[in-house]
Length: 306
Image (cartoon, rainbow, N blue to C red; front, side, top):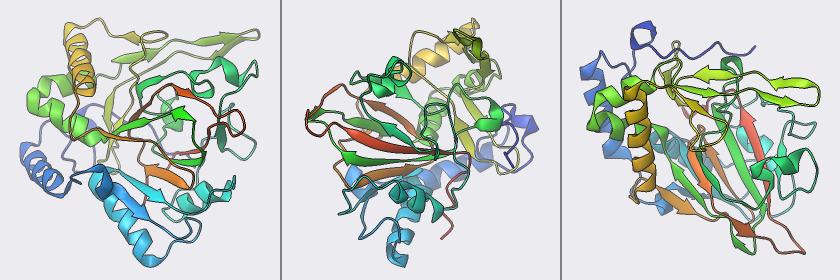
């Protein structure tokens, strides 16, 4: 069963949530805890594991703790083979089961993200060696296919480049709300960002998809972020408040800070996250061993209770 849509209006959230703009006390309490527990550096997000397919209890607890604090964890393992069971089995240990079986994924729902010369995949920037701007995955999906979590597992790194930057969406929300709550309110408009329809030779392959940038799950109170920094094939609402909020978010992401973590995944390493903001630098491949990332995207959110 696919979860229902995310609702953006604060007064429509059923569960108590610090992300409701009308509950200042809950916000202040959550903000203090978030900043107190947030990892100080990239190294604090890394967990060494013997086998990501079968985590030891201490390894699983360490990853869960990082996901609770920062919505992401980085695991490092000695397993460097092209084994799709690694991301799949790792995800299952954190309650992730509902893969987003998008049309560019393999039949098993897991994507092989590598440079492709195919007329299909090669037309999309993740399957090239070009840089990818800040985004969350699935920003073009309809609400019933919201991407809440994902695993990126490195099989082979590029000869040069291919660095990722990562930022917790809750921190992006926090920084913008600290600057001016009106920025968050504008980005919660249900029509703040529209991805135009995509057409192919058969007609409309994907209809236009409008939605908020920040939304709150009405059942759980969790925050979700839907965003892309791309400038083509995207329409921002003409409201001046929305445009000002988008500019503020762009400034936040363009300004180096300790909230933005940068790393180049090595073979055997991976990222487990609640669909955090991320980008990718351009890269040059090793002709004998091209960069290969397994990407598994889920409609579930990470179960970090363990």
